[in-house]
Length: 134
Figure: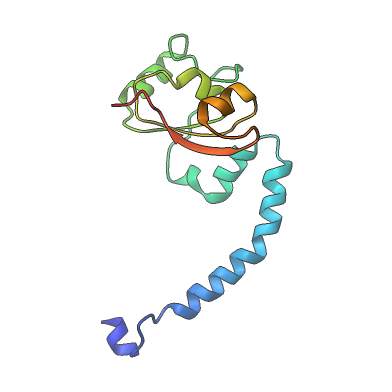
């Protein structure tokens, strides 16, 4: 109906164009913030606003990965109940990749062993789904 009234195939074209130009102006600064962060993937998640759309859960340990068997009861309960997990970091890839669960891994392949397993080069940013899930 809006298209008919505006006599335009895309009455929102100008708004989208301006938003795109604004986003492109912000991009270099955001890339710098992410690159210089101690936690680049976590920073990117927050900048993209993903933490406002999904529940982000700390595994409660200082190890670079998630040990479900030795995790807190709350972590075990949430992990068991959750249909989809988006996991951040190479450590979580290494510790969760064999678990039969619908897990997507976002990580930077930091070593040759993991890079080979993922079929990529060292330093590559990767989004992949668990191979052990149905």
